[in-house]
Image 1 (tube, rainbow, N blue to C red):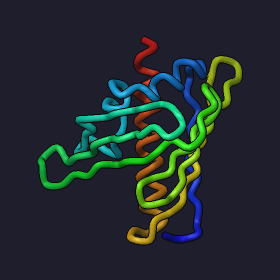
Image 2 (cartoon, rainbow, N blue to C red; image 1 turned 180 degrees about the horizontal axis):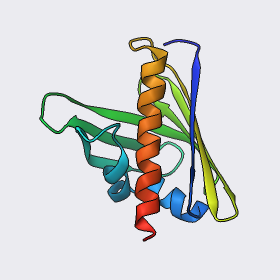
Image 3 (cartoon, rainbow, N blue to C red; image 1 turned 60 degrees about the vertical axis):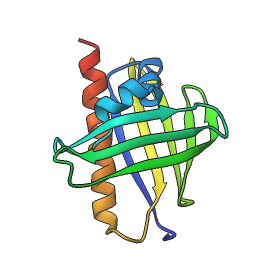
Length: 140
């Protein structure tokens, strides 16, 4: 683990309530939680309470690789913020700020040591971009 923190962000054309729901509902998570179209998220579990677990299975569609992304919620302020401590001890905080029918979503996470910072930032940003596209497409 490094001491470096990475921030990714997006603005979603939807209310905080809609954005929060799509970010914390397993059926929704499975629709957006992957960095590109070669990957998928076939399973997600959310126990949305302090001490509850969040698990998202990420897999290459060709079956060549996959992993479970797991963490424990430490702080939850509904429609405002989530603090997730990943199973390797790294922290990820996501905040939701609504204004004029849009929601600004910011995730700041501790970098890991195995992959370059740019690769981590780009991957997490791609997932957040998928999230934005998914939520906005649900609105019609």
